Image (cartoon, rainbow, N blue to C red; front, top):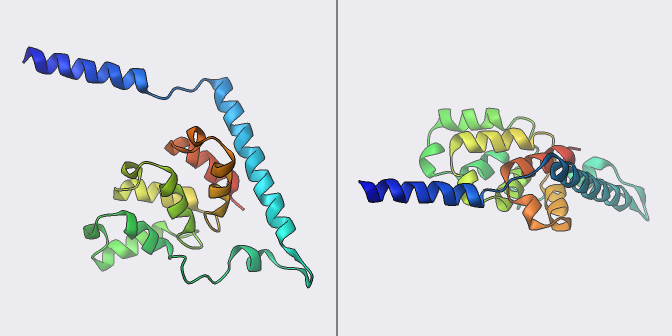
Length: 168
């Protein structure tokens, strides 16, 4: 019993020692970097809209009919165990959580930057679907994370901040 208590204490201390902490000043600096990277992405998207034919609409640029991009429901179910998506009532519930998501691009982008344990439970995926509302795809999230240190894109709250900043 003594060894178990010692083992738990060591694990607890080790977990606290390795926990990622962020001061208020560090958070402000990180959020400024996120905002700058998202602004650069959106500026590039605006420039990409100009072609020799003239200016294309935002829908043409951001909502291409790409058959490889899964629906939001398909993206959510791809991250969950099959028993979460094997009943019509479960799929209807997931579809309700997906309202406001154009497709599954944002879902897949968010989950690709997080450890798998952030996207393997229904309540977590409900949260990810909510985070993604208003994001047309995952391209802004991926672009921002590619411009920042991976340290700024590996925590749920960080990716949430990026998704909020990327909302178009």
